[in-house]
Amino acid sequence: MKKRVTEVIQKTLQREFVLEKPTNLFFGHYATPIAFSLAKELKKSPIAIAEELCSKFDTEGIFQAVTPIKGYINFKLSESFLDHYATWALEHESEFGSDTHNESILLEYVSANPTGPLHIGHARGAVMGDALYRIGTHLGYKITSEYYVNDAGNQVDLLGLSIYLAGREHILNVAVQWPEEFYRGEYIVDLAFVAKEELGEAIFHDEKNIKHLSVWGKDKMLELIRSNLADVGISFEQFVSEKSLYGQWDASFTRLRNNAKTYEEGGKVWIRSTDLGDEKDRVVVREDGRPTYLAGDIIYHDNKFQRGYDRYINIWGADHHGYIARVKAAINFLGYDESKLEVLLAQMVSLLKGGEPYKMSKRAGNFILMSDVVSEIGSDALRFVFLSKKSDTHLEFDIDVFKQEDNNNPVFYVNYAHARVNQIFAKAEKSLQDIVHIKLENLSEEAQNLLFSALLLPEVLDDAFHSRQVQKVTEYLKSLAAALHKFYNENRVVGSEDEAKLLKLFAVVALSLRVGLRMIGIHAKERM
RNA sequence: GCGCUCGUAGCUCAAUUGGAUAGAGCAACGGACUUCGGAUCCGUAGGUUGUAGGUUCGACUCCUUUCGAGCGCACCA
Image (cartoon, rainbow, N blue to C red; front, side):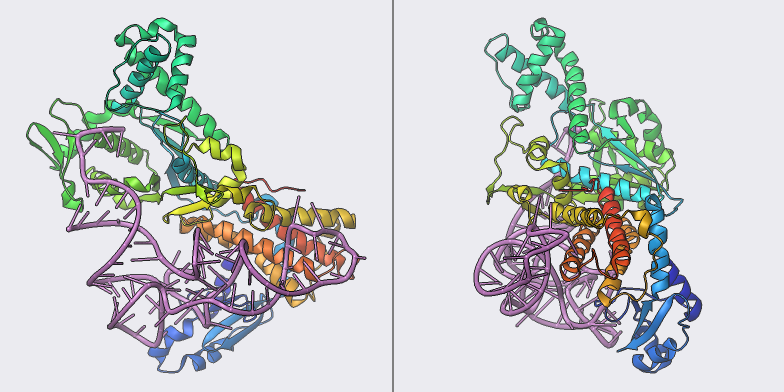
């Protein structure tokens, strides 16, 4: 819709302009403040310019009226244009809001270490990544979703050790000296018992088995993570193992060295990340020859860029923000365009329950488990609330709100609007086929506004994806649902003169709600 | 101390990325045809957008100052 409008205006004005929506639909459906920017150049008042420009538009086709108000030029769409679009949308539900783009994008998210279950912090990045994936794919981008598995290094060793010691303490009943650092959650003890089942008790007799337990435990945790994700409807196209990329280190390292971006000092190899704005240079190879974590990420990003996507998006927890500079520096040093990498940060989440801080799970080792929250409020509510706020703001919410079945609960509210439309169709004993070709004309002001709002979904999706701000979708769904509830309360549909027209209008609203919800991974309810 | 992110109604958050009178929900108060599902809707009240400057036709948005919060500042991942 916006595309068509832009085309038409472009053709008439023959210059660049900003197209926006008026704050009040009373003015029109679209508006441009172009007269303000022309005022200086033309040495005339914006008001005069706006009036002049308005007369250039013909009001036979797509626009019903083009009016100047206080320097703004306002465009009102014609009913026949809106009706055509509505009919098309109803007949092509799966294409509503879709588009084509050539850009290919590698979207990496979650990538939690396979050393424990997912906690609530991971959930925010997870649902955000998944929503971007769904929206972007719908918009026609070629997106690949990927999970990077840190299956090398200390943490996995620590996992093995923790299971081993838990087994000795709880299964062999021998006294154990716990080291300073280990994984504390009760899930470790559970794992030890599973290990006993699957591998036999003898595994805890010899510390040589720790290595084996590490790999075994890592696989188990990855399985758990996948099932946690599956519970909220998230799956990945590919998992990339850190370990499997290690063979490529020499090649990456050689390129860095040849570009003179590394140096040796104190027996270690450093990368000159300060050249590109990092606070200090970073070690990539330790004195004993083992590569650092950064080395792993250098290989991984080298590998990513070799795969030749147009764009790379990483979603990281906000606590990793300090890492962006060095990774971007490394990408640049490897000879790639680092601006192709976008890092989105998911800020911290704090949960309340009945106004009190949510109890940490002992099972998880003082984290809030994502699976606990999901079993309390469900996947839909979790998604909706996490996607309702800008990802870079700190978020606090009370999970009791999402158990209520009323206005407090936005998931419920939006679903209710959708179900309501279904109920009306049932009451009227009509189906979509009966009304899809009814012409929407001579609508009341309110009906026309509602129709227009419902048809905005495509541009909302577009905007949300481009700005990587998924809360625009949830905001839109809430306001569209509100508009429907309001209209419903003020207008009788079934049995009225305009029954067929209003049913069609409602069908468009329901369509928009349904597709919008689908974009954030929620299945719209037919009845409550 | 340095860096990143953030500061909007009592609370939780929006604001078309520089545009028209800064909007929703909650909480408070007052209302709605004996209902196409009242699981909804309408109204009232609530703001110097943390502070102080600057940029311009125009600033919640950009720049500078200052205060406050969170996070980060590993040869851990």
